[in-house]
Amino acid sequence: MKIEYDPYHDILNIEFLPEADISESMEFDGIIVDYSEDGKIVAIEILDISKRTQKDPLDLLDLSITKQPVAL
Image 1 (spheres, helix red, strand yellow):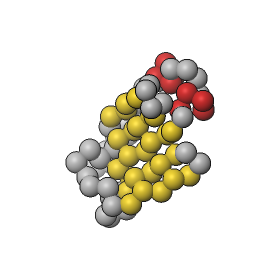
Image 2 (image 1 turned 30 degrees about the horizontal axis):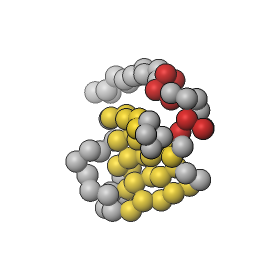
Image 3 (image 1 turned 180 degrees about the vertical axis):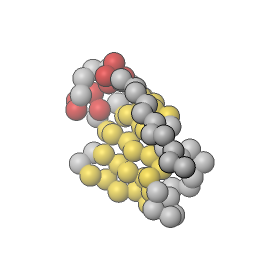
Image 4 (image 1 turned 90 degrees about the vertical axis):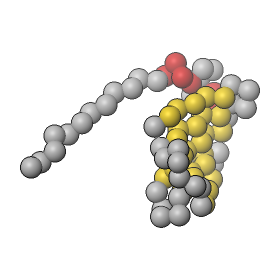
């Protein structure tokens, strides 16, 4: 997963599948969800992110990863 913020265009992009081709994009009130051919989410873009959060949205980043043990 890759998270990028473009301050010039004020867009936050969260990329889940960097190698996948985008087959379809849907926009919901300034939030664009890109889908692959098989319906998986490739990326999510949030337009005008600083107006929706704060001036520098990456300051809000608090990354925590929780892994569940694999059942045998």
